[in-house]
Amino acid sequence: MTDMPARRRRPAAPASCEPESDAFDLWLGASLREAFDAVTSEPIPEDLLRMIEEDRAERERLRRRRRGED
Image (cartoon, rainbow, N blue to C red; front, side):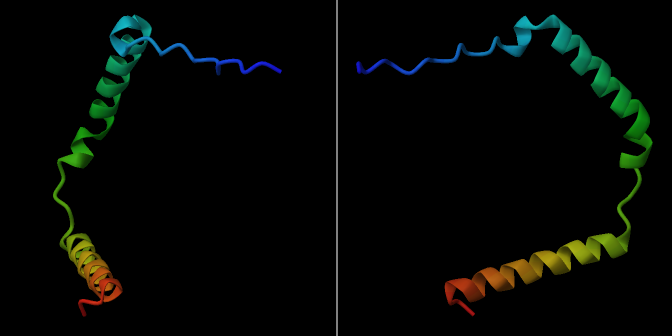
């Protein structure tokens, strides 16, 4: 048996070379913004922010414990 070089995959064309993809991406982005901009502009509820901060503190406490800092 001879050692044959592995087949190389052709690199994908850059996104700028694919106009269909660009048009779809533009359409999708605009559609998502139209559908969800009102939701994303709403303030985050205080309860949710508190839960995120508590989780972040708990994760940090666990990291310190694993490193032997606690």
